[in-house]
Image 1 (cartoon, rainbow, N blue to C red):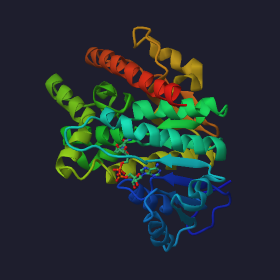
Image 2 (tube, rainbow, N blue to C red):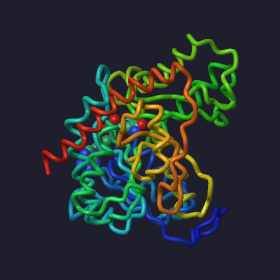
Image 3 (tube, helix red, strand yellow):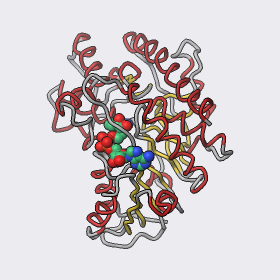
Image 4 (tube, rainbow, N blue to C red):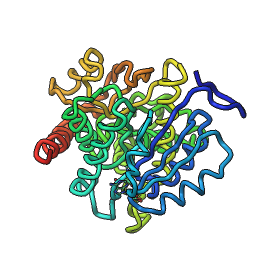
Length: 347
Ligand code: NAI
């Protein structure tokens, strides 16, 4: 079993493949993954040939993992995916000002579908972490491709919504004047990963948001839901969140490694998953959705050796959060159908 290692070599082989590794998220995420003391192999793949240079650059860092870089030449994708235990996907185009995540669907849906087909045939047992937007639809796309290939395991597929959690921590700490303590804030964010489907449960914030008015709660909720727009506008056409997303992606992968490979128990992270991954756990959600059954939702997930170990209850919602839930459910339904139908129509 691999262990935290202050200078020691990892004792178990763990390979991560990063698809879209030369991009705005891909490069800093590759850098962070190279910091992991637990990974033994890090394969970087991108259609942009510069990815090979990125791999050489990162390979000079003196941490355990062996880094390899591949573009499309010579079956690069298959080589990157061979023996991968974890596949992280930030491949695709990002938003420009005025675009919603759903506007990215036409381009990113095919990219994600094609990558999923290669995963299905090369490393079907890998844990898959989907970053490419619109996550609400790209996760169902990956699932449908794997189902068609007969290799789908819902416990191993995750939509990475961790950036919404980082934003919720940061903005909540800020509003009560405790920015320095933001990393200690625990604010669940459930639902999906796009606008009104993002549902921060501020009523469950730990520490509680004492002295914060309902008006402030509503403004804070909107800021978390549309935090990505702040970055898109500030970058003025040069892309969307990349560095904070890389940090979020790394946090998710680190926790997955801890739970799945390092035997750590009690690792909980909110993630957008197929609810059937733990049919008994997902039942509690129905009482909050007016019994509307959704296939996918971001829920608190206890991670374990097989990936999803257990879906944890989302707990009580405030009246305001219940109204947000209705809007989130309505929009998510369409996003999910869009992803599923895309694969039905195109495969
Ligand atoms: P980027 O354009 O900087 O990088 C994307 C990379 O993907 C490029 O290097 C490109 O060559 C590569 N790529 C394109 N097609 C590919 C394919 N078929 N196989 C492998 N690589 C391919 O974009 P950025 O900023 O890195 O964003 C990537 C994705 O992540 C976007 O869809 C964006 O919307 C999404 N995103 C998701 C977030 C989340 O919270 N889940 C947050 C921020 C962005």
